[in-house]
Image 1 (cartoon, rainbow, N blue to C red):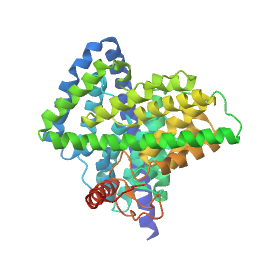
Image 2 (cartoon, rainbow, N blue to C red):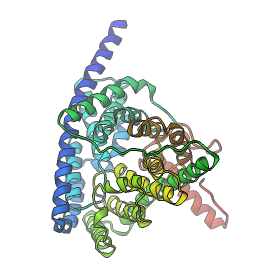
Image 3 (cartoon, rainbow, N blue to C red):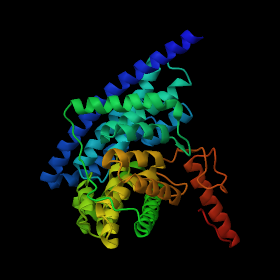
Image 4 (cartoon, rainbow, N blue to C red):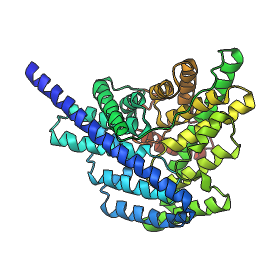
Length: 433
């Protein structure tokens, strides 16, 4: 029995190393191409005119050949919970169409692509090594870690993200070693290819005082509400498009035209793509009120129309600019509030509080750790049972009086909507706290 366990462990270790190397190479290629197409779009703004064509092409390929790939990160989560089949083509599709989306100005991120590639590779390699039913879900979590850690250059946060992403209220300790191995290996390989990541610094960490803590608490509530509103808005817009337009190509075309219309009507070209300039502006305390608002609108419209990419970098942008804005108004270190906004708006939308804290430590150092903890936990609770990953399984409810354990966010959202309709018909009141 001991020999069998040792054999399984060694096989898992070998698999994680192979996965980390492959994911590191994939992230290096992806980030390099992303940099090229971003520069091309900024130099040739006429490329945004091709956004509707990319939208329709994306919808067509996923509809005709995707084999459920359009579920994106949620399919990766389903492969952990339900052993759902993940087609290998998913990695190629998300890679290609994310690059095309950035080339033509869609306001999307990069985490979704990296996590999907990592999850797809994990499924494929797990099948090749014939990992058993207990080991394969763990291996898929390590693929998620490899994708996140390598694409952002944050292997520590990546390791925790893989252990947290699929559940709410649970850390998958059984995946700890594989997640750390793949995340750090993938990040190391990515850096070997010469890929570098932007660095941001908290200029001053103010002493803990009643006023500073009050500002951070208030800001954290705003971050939580922003993450909650973002997740709900994307899901509702997708649902609205599906209800109004049954034909997938028409839906993609109309959604793309709306993105273009807003882009030119409100001159939001600078909010296209990754828009990481917003993070720098937030840290300098040079943010305008409409910066986070317009990035929010452009990202919701782009993701709602079905464009590939992800949500995390836009959430970083919104959080950092919103935090910088609050810091300016409250006369508390804008760079500190920008850092808290960056990690918290993402963390509460993804429902990953420990990843949020680790991300703060990894990106900005441990000096502000008490503030990271306050911001991460408060925003996590304020965001409620909402999130950007509708297949997340609620292991432990955020609120003791809610009976949502064992359900997915999608199920809870649908049930909440039905309860709201019933209450409305009875003339009652409803709260989904």
